[in-house]
Structures are given as structure tokens and as C-alpha cells.
Length: 633
Image 1 (tube, helix red, strand yellow):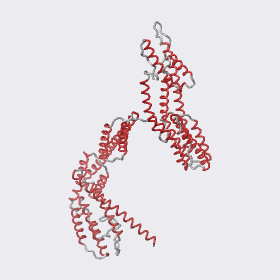
Image 2 (cartoon, one colour):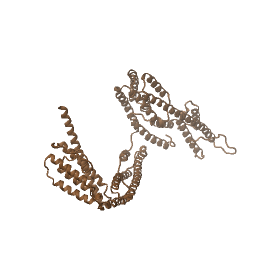
Image 3 (cartoon, helix red, strand yellow):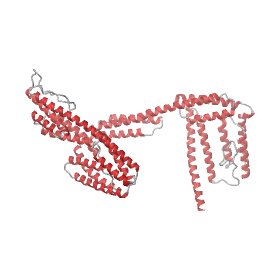
Image 4 (cartoon, one colour):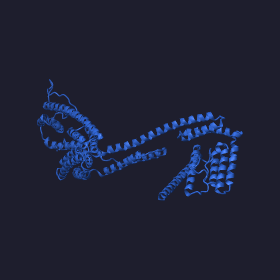
């Protein structure tokens, strides 16, 4: 190896090994990734560099120029760009060395591989020409002409691949239409064959589009075979042909697995994978076995191929594993469904802690270090982007809720001086229900808004309750209802007939009493229900709510309560209790003490709902048993 080429060759080998190892790891998967093309190009470059060290190291400038001239005149010159670059590099290294030996300035400006420039080989008048000038100018001229032709070739190749992409996309649309048509397969199958032929005849597409286009095509090929109701005879015939072809591919892959030429076997295997994908599926009973056979042979070839690129440092591998684990943690956190600010804050702290761990870990392997960092950064960005969106939306919702509550306050304040007691009472009660249905508002405004709304309501109800006229003697009504409750509690049960009559009488007297002060309404109503339930378990069974306006259904006479009846009564009572708790919880303020009361009330609600579910399950089970008994009878 010549000393002037040695540093660059070492760098090329290191970079090639890194990239090749990355691509070889992906090659172990069943699907041949499009990145294999890049791997092959790198491998070819490595081989060519090695050949260059042997072929060009001892060539003279004239011989190197002649070799380049011969290359530019060859039929396959466009496919030999790497050889051309190697010749150029060898030429200028030789030129620098010979100039140094001749005592001239050894600095030689090597033409940029990406730049095409016009160079004249004619000497400048009155200028002393170096003996190397003419040959250098001649080589530059040859090289620039080659680069122009190569650039035009690449443009044409790109345009051709773009055209192939358009063609294949149109073929996919035709296949999609054929699948969705689901017509008579006697007509559809020849069309499908024609589409397959068109696909195979169309050349390669741009590398970045290859996977998406091919996966989409294969998706609709599978749909054609599996989802469309095709003619069994034609399908089985096609399955047999595909099985024969894929069996041949398996045999070829197994032969490659025995080959001593590992690199050549790997290249041939990629071609087999491409051909494999061009054929449709086989019968279902053979799909797994034929693929496993092909995959097993592929695994052998890939394993041998990967053996060329082992030797990464253990610590870098461990760092990569540790960083990948942190990526997975952050990705899992970023994918969680988060509904509250406390959850966002807790998870934000967890993300920050993970970022601290990340900074303590050293570099991963060179080929993966940037990628794993990009993955980690993307996961963190996704989390904090969702957090920003959540708080922006939360803020908008709270502002909207505040607008709604302000509108309710304005209505309540407008009614606070009303003397239309019945109508205004109903309206304010409805506004209170609406208030409870509205979500949270900004913390700084919450207590202020609530106090303002409650003050408007209290102003009306306090004034209403002070009125002493018979039609709205609320405190007198409260006293009458409390007395009636005491009378109910003192009642001594007789027989079913008497109990039913007494219950009916108590209910009618309760309904005849007017409204009580607003703040006492729920408490006195609950006391009445409890007293009636204790003395008359069958009271209002299946009927309207106790104490409501309208008739009350009579309890069943001369019929003892069954277990199901008792459970049903308890179920109805729990429903009413839950409704009362939920109504009450909306009227607590947001002070520190009120939060504790809310928590206690919420515990009652949760416990009542749990009991409700248990009762419902028991009642359903009894109903089911009764139905089974009826059928058996």
C-alpha cells in the first residue's frame, strides 16, 4: 500500500464497515429493505478501492491518462463512475509526487467531483510551462467531459425512474379498482395477469419511493387472492404456479447458503427476494411452510454475511441498548392518555429525570448514535407538544366556561329582585342545574364567580322566604312538614289495609303543604322519605317520587314484600340519594374547607354507586331465575 493513499483508505474502510453492518442487521429480517442497494454500493466501492491499490499504485501519469481515456470510450462507462474517481485520485497523487521529486510546487488542485469546468490544454503565451502542465490539462479535459456526460446520464436516469413511479402508481390504481370491483373472476383474472405483467416490465422507481409503492402493490395483490371471491379452479391453478416458482427460489436460496462466496451469495439472495415479491401467494396450507423454508435459507446467508462486520466495542453496544430503553420509556409516556394537569406535571418530571439519565450515558455506535438521539428527541418533543396543546385547549375551555357562567350570573342578578316567587324560583333552580353542568373556570375567578352567583340566588330566596302571606309562608310550611314527619315516625302499624290508607293520607297531606325555605328543601325532603320508607316499606313502589306533585300509587294490599321487591325499593332509594348528593356537591364553594366537604360527598357518591351496581346484579339474577322457573313450569 502506497503511503499517500493509506490514510484515506483506512477512513473509507471504517466508514464502509459501519454502514455495511447497519444494513446487514436489517437484512436479517424477512423483508429485504430498500437500504440494501446502498449497502451494495458501499461494498462495491470498498472492493474497487482495494483493486485500485493494486492496479493503479504503480501506473505512470501517461498510463493513468490512457486508462481514463479507455474508460470514457467504453460502452459501460456510465456504470464505472467509481473507477473513474479512483483513476482521478491516483492520477493526482502520482502528479503531486512527481512534482515534488522534480522540485516543483507539489500542491495540485484536484478537480471537484461535483463540478464541471472548462479547461484549456493550450499553454499561455510568454508563460514558462511546467513539463506536467500539458498532461494535467489533458487529463482535466477528459475528466470534465466525462463528468458532463455522467451528469446528463444521471438526469436521464432520475427522469426515467420518476416516470416508472408514475407508471407503477397507475398500475396500483388499476389493481385497486379491480379488487374493489369484485366482479366475475373469469373476467377479472386475465386483467390481474395483465396488471402483473405490466408491473414486472416496469423498471425501478426512485429509492425513497420503492418501499411504499411495493408494499401498496403487494397489499392489493393479497387482497385480490384473499378477499375477492375468485373462481376456485383458476385460483388453485395460480397457487400451484406460484408454489412451483417459490419452491425454485427456495432451492436457489438453499444453494446460496452452501456457497463459499459470501458476498456474491448475498447479492444473488437480494435478487431472489425481489423475484419472490413479484409472484402472488400460494395456497394457505403452504404459505407458512414455503416462507419458512425461504426465510431459513435467507437467515443462513445473512448470518454468514454479518460475520464480516462484527467487532463493535462492547461499551458502545451497551450505551445503545440503554439509550434505546430510554427512548421506549419516553415513547410509552408520550403515547399515554393523559386527562389531568396533575398527570401532565408528574409525567413532565419523569421525562426530565429520563433526560438527566440520557446525558450520563456515553456515545452509542457511530452508525446509530445520531439516529437514537433523533428518536429520543422526537419522543420528548411529541410529549411536550401534546402538553402545550392540552393546556391551550384547557385554557380555551375554561375561558368558554367562564363566559357561560357570567351569562348565568347576569340572568340570576336580573331576577334577584323579582317578586314572582313561583316562576322566578323555577328559573333560578334551572340556572343552578346549568351551573353544575358547566366545567372548570380559571382558579383565580372560580370563587369570585361562585360567590356572585350564590349572592344573587340568596338575595331572591331570602326575600321570598321572609314573606308572611299565606300563599308563601315558607317557614310555616317547614314547621308543618316537620310536624307531619314526627307524626309519621310515631305511627304504629296495624294491618296492610290500614297501613295503605295511612300512607296515602300522609302523602296527600305532605303534597298539600306548600314550599319550604330553599336552603331547607333537601333536608326536609330526605327526612320525609326516610320516615315513610321506615313505616311503609311498600310506599310509592314503582310510582312517582315521594313528596312530588300528583297522585301516589297505592301499595299492594295483602301481599308481603318479596326479596326482589325489597332490593328494588333499596335500588330506587339509592338512585334518589345519589341524585341528591350530586345536586348538593355543586353548591360547595372552592375554599379549603369546602374542598374537604366535596371529597367526603364524593366518597358517599362512589360508595352509593358501587352498592347500586351490586343491587342491579342481584335483581338481574333474580329476574333470570324467575324466567327459568316460568319456562320449566
